[in-house]
Image (cartoon, rainbow, N blue to C red):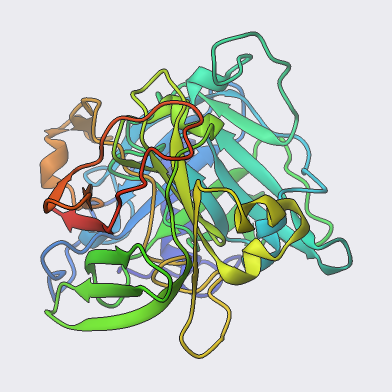
Length: 388
């Protein structure tokens, strides 16, 4: 990545932030030079920026081509309503993420941790939402908007919310304010004119698949693109049913609806209906808000072999996973220099194909809507395959 001197900025963010400042001000930016060593096949590295103004631009920069420049930066949407506050008491799993990172990525929201509140067993956060939630609930009914959310005009399933450029859980977040970048931490509150930067980097080794044996003590295994495999945990409670997880309303059957430090959520219902199941780590199942998971058939509970915590730990609950739906067309990208680029030519997240074994080999996830404790009673295995 190119580096330029900028006294007000430090570290790796120098070239990124200077490029963004020039782009926002309308100044001419030299074309970014390609790195000397090309990225490995399938590797992605991109920067998302959100201008926290009404009408502010949402940009994507392909960092595999160097620092953000006119030729590798694309406007992918706009802000409908900026955030002006922090959600002081967020959901419990925010406790396990790091401050100034993406703690949850889903088809219905991106959540960014601001700081932790260990004495309250949770953290604080701000959120980014798709256009379906602009003044509406998931089911389309009117709903009041909240000040801790950046509302966008980007459709769920396109680019950010389950699309090709969804932020990976654990991605670093910075705020660009008055020419300086800052972490999100205790005392931070969003202001009009801020630019939020989310840098999404690939893991050292890309996942090829995840396999869950659906039985007590069943093996949870990761296979990687470099042909290695590892046992990453075991099943403490098997899965037999599906339930009414609201976010599945915006996800098709057999897709990853959400990923965060304590949940992998899979939709089993068609878009526009509710149904799905969740895979959660053992210590999250012990939290007060998840006590139901210990008996409810809609949850698979997994644990590590050595008894160590899995919350926030890759590959299941950190750094590797992301929402992915694949049922909506994503338009070609147009660079700031005016060049139309097919999305396939910009390194992006792999597709996720989910299959299940119900006793006769692997098949696509069957459609199951609403609350059905026995919808997956015959389930033997879940396999998530990642494909470019």
